[in-house]
Length: 147
Image (tube, rainbow, N blue to C red; front, side, top):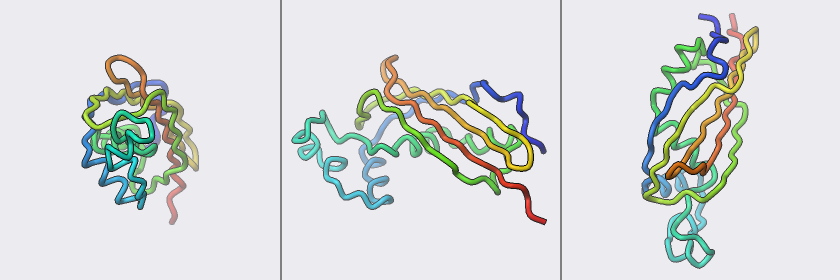
């Protein structure tokens, strides 16, 4: 199925995610980040945070845990998820994210390119209490199938 370029500019999902302290710890363990600011509330407060902030790459965890249907959405757009490659991730933070935060997320298709080397970019806007906290951008590419 070819990439459906009509998805460009459309919202594909909206979801709510509650940040859990254990998820922050799991991510730190997975990426090997031993900085106590992310796991020890006292260390975080010593550095000026209200609590243990989520690491900068936590947005990816939020997307895939908060909206596991993203894979189905990609398939519906014509993206062959068995061949996709992660090309780029960007984060623009407006405020720290803490355990207990309830974040509302909206995922939109930012850009699409068809052809031999397909590309899709997604923009996810996260808000807390109606205020923007983070904008995350993810770009994937799908190389041509090998014969």
